[in-house]
Amino acid sequence: MECAWLRVPLDHRHPEGQKIKIALNRIKGTATRGRDHLGPLLINPGGPGASGLELAKYIARTLPAGVIGRYDVIGFDPRGVGQSVPALSCVDPKRYFKAPRPDAVARNAAEEAVLVGRARAYAQACGSRWAWMLPYMSTEHVARDIDVIRAALGEQKISYFGYSYGTYLGAVYASLFPGHVRRLVLDSVVDPAGDWYSSNIAQDYAFERRHRDFLAWVARHNAVYRLGDDPEAVRVAYYAMRDRLRAHPAGKVIGPSELDDIFTVGGYNNTVWPELAAAFSAYVRQGDGGKLVEAQRKHAQNGPKEENGYAVYLSVQCRDSTWSRDWNSWRADMIRVNRAAPFMTWPNAWYNAPCAFWSVPGGTPPRITASPKLPPVLMLQSRRDAATPYEGALRMRRLFPNARMVVEPGGNHGVSLGGNACVDRHLAAYLRDGTLPASHVRPVAGPDASCPANAAPRPADKAAA
Image 1: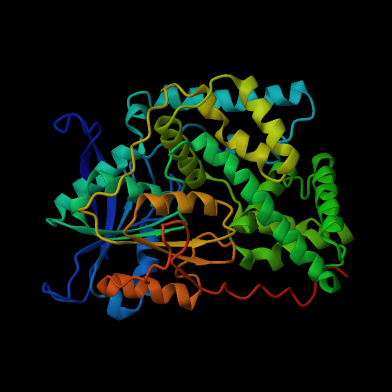
Image 2: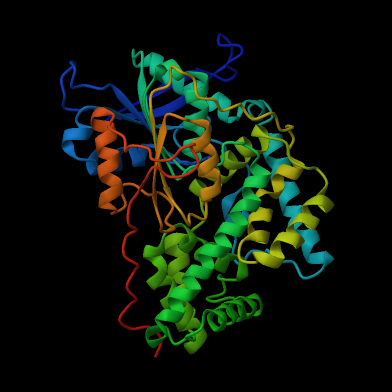
């Protein structure tokens, strides 16, 4: 693996002006510089705010050798992220994330005022520290950074493989530079509209559906977890646990907001369900919060890396599109959505609330279009994905008539290279020689091919006594 930094313009409208540095790594392919060598494959894991350096290494060792050997895998930390310079940080993470945090579900005006104050203070801290950089923290600027990477590599075309928000970034790049794309893989596809406020509300409903999938799974395995054989009974037990943690945080660190963090992980991937269910059962049946503490340390820890990711997440989303500056408008929307989707609505609202007070106004999202120069695109999606709901993926599919979308019926976020052999065969065939599944959809309205979901997770042999 090789590592480097690349200087890119802070403002791409003024390429000779101030520069910042993007961190890169490269794992070279084994193919020679001939027909077998397909050039760079850039990797992005999403966020916005996630580092691509580790993911590049994972992909280089996970794809079949006959596929990955044809590429030089390029990971990068987008502007502001990780090892890029500067890396954004707005507050002291030890103080800001000190547990237990205030409950995201305020019970009165005073509690809501505390949460509004946290959101405003975070926005003000970012604006004070990074006033010179925040105007240029947009998806379009990151997409233009990618093209500087391409040029620095001396390549006319690159391939791109993005997960989650990385699919939106890839679609923006493909819209701006269609002639520079060789292959484009979009896994767990973001709604192309770029209206992040609306996307977050769509997430609220999708996470509610996925959380109820988890509760139903726990009920099916009542012989192990003994929380009720009816999903509604399990749901009541879950919210009773949340209420109890408000008054008595487990291990003095797991309050309701930390519980939200832990169980949100289960909305992304069901392989953690047995671990989460065991912690849930131990607390409810034995009053033992130790497994909740362990789960938080393992899956939902907040530290400097997470605060950097949060700062970049907000910097990009608050800048990309417009946000209401009227908190009363937010409150009215969240009260309405929370009636149907209580699991995620308020935690998600407060996570994004600094955008209501951001020092830089939001812009107009770039228009995503399919140029005739753009090669066929591979899209991968799970139907019950909570983070990137299926309906948004369908909208992206309609924008790219030459795309093919492979769908599996599960709900895990990040479909490929996670154990689904059918999905991985489609990915490998496309990366190897551009082979796509045939489309049987006329007009373009849905998936072109389907794969079975991975088997549901098996419960732990033992839970609470």
